[in-house]
Length: 545
Image (tube, rainbow, N blue to C red):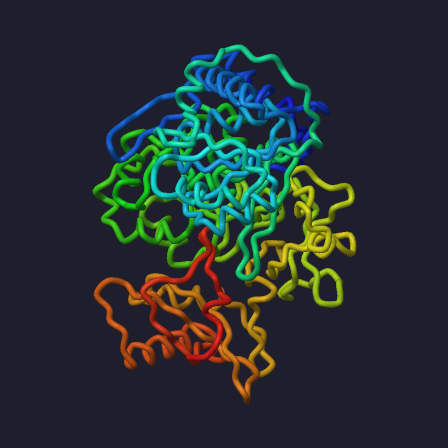
């Protein structure tokens, strides 16, 4: 390895090897496709970039030389179809290896990549195409998402090109054939770091998804994500479990990992089976793992002694708050602490536990050195230790990794950027040592009889009960208290809904945390309602029952 990451950063460490300062540096024409993928592809063509496999037993290993060549061929093919700098392109590729050709190819073209989930339906497609003005879609042949694009196309006047991966379909161009026939050389197109790079549709709990636009600095900002939070080993192999339609995929399966010259592991599956993932860790000698806490909860329900996890050296979690039982349980079984991190589609990792530090149970860590982070109260003042406030980031000047804007939505952009801060809408408190503890979304805070109750405070207790597999806490209106705590619970196997179980869970919460936080309403569900991006749709859960 040539440590190319050091070209793009100035950083210092203390005597214990813990990072103390971090500042990105880059040329004005930095482009991940040329300056990372092609740089490694030319100088170390045989260096592993990705190991890919699927449940069918198919396996492929891609070197950086392969990725450079295939991304050049993809750029040539897409260019021949008229895709050019500034064009918006939807990319719906699940975990297919072709995503890793498409992403750098679109970056080389200067086009804007819009990753999307394969769970889109007709009305989802219409909104995304028309809101973004997408010119093309590159889509998996698996499932029925191509049907959704066909149904929506008559109402999507900008959608000129439909390109199918992994199959043939009437009215669609064949990606695989087009790339195979395209040339392998590609001349650099000049781009600027301030040019748009990619855009995500970020689903909230209410309203239409917002379009989060990032520039080319975003890819480089994920160096902090991979190097100082995920601790990827350039000579190892990193696994982040995420579909490419989610922002988590570029957090953990592309940018920072390849800037670190590390190999990423991709398992192209549809159904999460904990035992399969645990087996793959041993089979492929995976060295670092990142996934949501819920998946670690499922791992802990397996007999871990049956699996070879000896290669695993580091584990990180994000996407939802980490409960203490999972935090301590994983360490007890593996000797590895779960290093929690917090960020948004609008940012890279914003608060996290960095390499060389010991995490504290329940803490999302300390502010990333990439950002100037603070907690402010309702008066706009910096919070004292123990005081709950909103996580905010100073944006003048706008740091690398922070979104450019909510595309075509000046009102929401101005709401997010105000008073000198980017407002995350997430709340936390910090202790005397500066460790942050997540509370919840601003609009999810429950105010009951004068108390402010964060949903996570109750959820973190409920999920430690053996009957609870998954839960979400919201408010329900109450004439006397204004609002009360309501818990929507998915039960573990072997448990059945009953009034007795409701009372047992209520008493359990009363004993484990302040009694005023206990859920006065409990409903049992087969599954929690979620957005297509996997977020709990709390708006559907609010109300009495």
